[in-house]
Each structure stands twice: as structure tokens, then as C-alpha cells.
Length: 109
Image 1 (cartoon, rainbow, N blue to C red):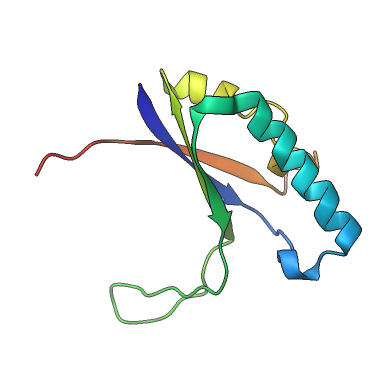
Image 2: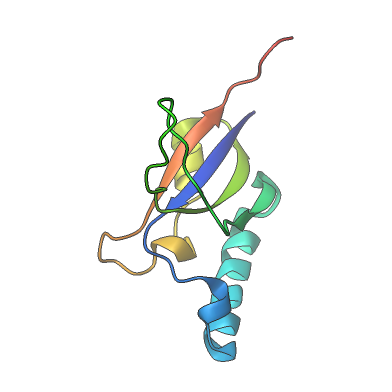
């Protein structure tokens, strides 16, 4: 089994701007997805808050639109992608949101 990192990208609104009803709806959708993937979910992750970007030339370009992460275990990249079926971050259907999937490669020290 390998571990895979999901990075959430898109123009998501900060959670503190949600109404209580919107927040409850979002939490329910995430709970449903987590229930579907069950033990494959190693780390539910967290949304990202304040951010900055530092370049190798010392400048501070605008940070990207990454919004959070999760970590899952799966047999392959294909299997990790299958776990994204009905993921709440992909529910808008307008192409503004995406999830990048990366295999976490073990390092030997």
C-alpha cells in the first residue's frame, strides 16, 4: 500500500465566512465522503489558513490557490483517484476546483 496526498486547489471561501447552515452542509458532505473511503483515509487533513510565498531569488510572489490536504492509502495512483468519487471539493461542476494527487514516496535516511 502506498500513501497519496490530495491537494485541494481552487477559489474556495474561507470557512469562517460560511453561514451556520452552509457550514453544516459542508461538514455533512465531507462526513459522507469520509464514510465512503473509510479506513483508506489516513489523515483527514485540514484547510490552509494564512499563506505566503517565497521564491529562490528572495522575492515574495503571490501564493497559489491551494486550500488544504488529505492523505489516503491505496494500492495505486488509479485506486487513489477512484477514492475521489463524489468528493465534496469536486461538487461544483464548473471546473474551478481540482484535487491534485501525489504519491508520497518513502525516503531512506
